[in-house]
Structures are given as C-alpha cells and as structure tokens.
Amino acid sequence: MELIDKAVIEGLYREARASERKRSHYLLHDTHQDKVQRLLIGLVKGSYVEPHYHAQPHQWEMFTVLDGCIRLNLHSNDGSIVKSVLAGPTESVVSVELKPMDIHSLECVSDKALILEVKEGPFDAKHPKSYL
Image (cartoon, rainbow, N blue to C red; front, side, top):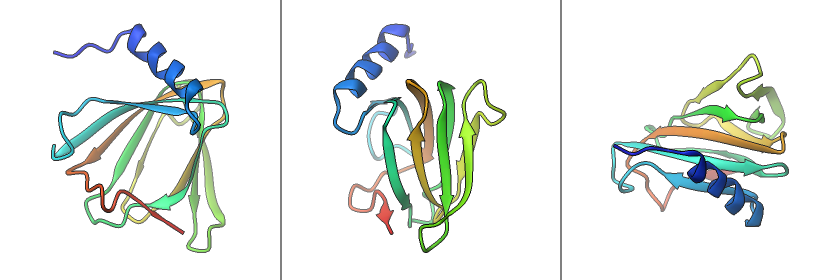
C-alpha cells in the first residue's frame, strides 16, 4: 500500500516553486515499462505546458484535478485554440481525457494545483511528446 499524505503534496508544491518549469512530478508507477503510468503533478501559478500531442496510438492520457484550477486548451493543427476548459474541484469540469494526437496545452491558473495523471504505458522516452 502506498499512501499519499499532505507531506508528499506539500513537497510537490515546494519543488514546483523551486523549479524553472514551476511543476514537479511524483511517480506512482514502478517503472516506465508499467502498463499503466500514474503520477501526481504539483504546479504553481505560471506553469505552462506548451501545445503538444502524443503520436503513439496508445498514448491517451487522463487528468483529474485534485486541488486548484488549471486551464486545458485543445488546439488545431495550426496551433490556434479550438476549446479552452477550466478544470478543478470547484469548476464544472474536474477530469479530462485526451485521445492520442489531441494537441493540447495546460496552464496553472490558481496559486497551486495538483493533478493526478493516468496514461497507458509503457512510456517511451524517445517519443514522449511531439510539438507543433
């Protein structure tokens, strides 16, 4: 059994504040070869994940926002925003599933946010994501 306590979460926020990318990861899976990849992502305001997509046919991903608020944008092939959604426990959307090839970006709009990300493995470090 693995318990995620407030100390783990506060550690993620502390690491995110110190990070240039303003985010930090806590892996819940054992290896990149696991069939299901699970991780917590702690973000602080200003963290931005550029528009990207996952080109492998098994690379769907699902975000559930446990704390705070994020803006998730879906983009067209030319990079323009097709849809923008606020997600978080106080928003109407708390979870989003993205299909392979969905071009998306993500931004932390609250002071801090905590995301549980689940995606199919294995993780291929040679093809983690593709940018426009």
